[in-house]
Length: 353
Image (cartoon, rainbow, N blue to C red; front, side, top):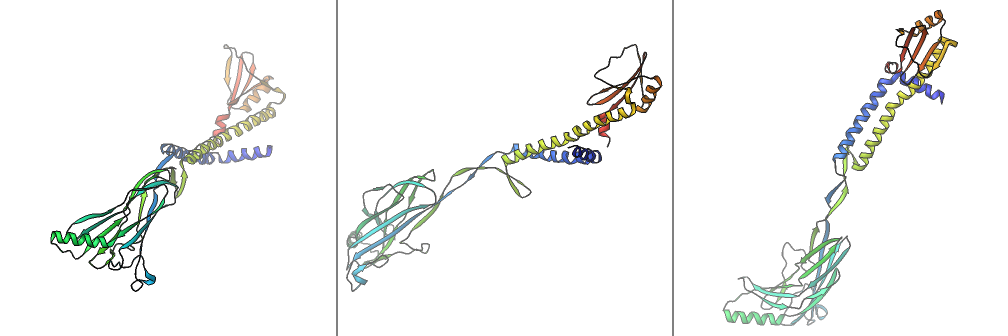
């Protein structure tokens, strides 16, 4: 331990100013980091939206002559000929898709609307509302396409207007509500299957913007705000605000200890050196005292250096009284009513490399 103290003393004696400068700069940076981090919020709210998708599948089928349809069955996507089949079965499968946990329920209702290019329209089908308690459901309805032609003929006979082409829009009218990812959710899925109705045939209407009318989808996002730990961007590093505060505090404590360390080491060693030097110079004449009381009527003479005090003590044959404190070492030689005094200030010595 003694050798380490001696090495530290030698290091501080030779590099005290540069050593202090390093820790003053480091402490200043830590203080700036601490102030800046204290001015920043610990947490911030950022959008963490929930992506979801409505997915649907339409199918329709009917029994029909094998001369027209393969295996005697009308399949989804094929043309419907009312002359050979009237009853068409339609079904719709619905699913709500998301990566978050869901608790959903909803309703569905089959409706069908017949319309023409001149703006005329009429509801030809309205089924009762059905409820479901999951994120998926399926339902079906039976459509009589022959009645469509009969209704069209009645309208044209009554109005005298011949529309060569009509549109049949069939919708399951899906509506869902509940919770998605812990957030309240409510939405509609406007999926529809659109047919072109002519006098002898009914076929799917395919819009350019729609890839597959039998597989409608709709994507969306549910707005959700989530609290995140705020980060400070320092030299391309992202440091959480709480961590930055602890780093600043820890660095300030280290700098304070580091700046006090030379004071403690050099002070202790200077006190020890002072006693060694005094014993070498005064020998048996040296007397350590706790305190000294000087008569105000005494004549106090300040000696410029310790060597002069040694000479005076030898000439006068008096003892040398030494009062040692943390800040200095005071030496006194008392001869009658004359007191010779010399003080060695440790702080001055410490500040002088």
